[in-house]
Length: 208
Image (tube, rainbow, N blue to C red; front, side, top):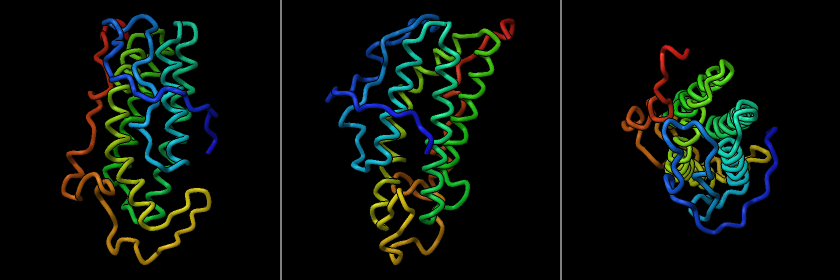
């Protein structure tokens, strides 16, 4: 994956989302609302390294001045596109149905982030800053549920993310997984899909 390389932070505890909330209406740089911690570690190096990079890029967005905000948001989107695409490939390789709830959440989140980029390119910085704040809340929930379930599933079938080799093919599901691979059942898929309002701020129509 063509991702930005990052070094794992030394913090051992995560700062709870909201510990350093952005002041409404999210118009200025703030202290990052999320730090890498053991609570986010899924004991799957390929996935964890990508998540470390995501957290670092998100922090770079939150601390950016207006002059750098759009470019840093663009970098986060590019990384996230590759990040989600990588996980989607792993799911496709190991028995997930196209359009499973985990894949759907990826698509919805990327769509919202790109909408934020378009607003930023029009000079509206507040929506990006608010989305960044919301991501500090959304990401731990996503990582500790859907991604944790995916990691367990990949380990159960002996999947090697580096090569795509499956050492225990007999453990692959007989039926395609439409749920989230351990974090929800197929019947829960619709409940797991995020609303764009989870990370999309309201915008002022007059400012558009």
